[in-house]
Length: 59
Ligand SMILES: [Zn+2]
Image (cartoon, rainbow, N blue to C red):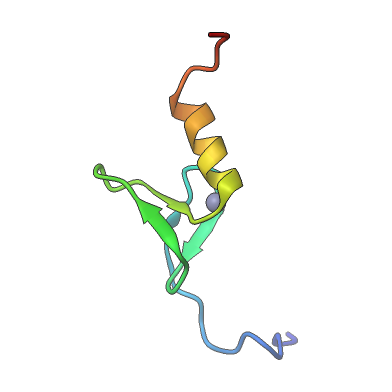
């Protein structure tokens, strides 16, 4: 097994992004909601999150 030269310390997954569905690791910048859900501090994760829990429609 070849170890990655840059990332030597073990990454600690603390949760999953409700936006993109990707891993949230310790040290990541996230937005946490009241109910404990987390998303990355990223516009696309926020957008995905809104699309998932909101209902897209025409005003
Ligand atoms: Zn994300």
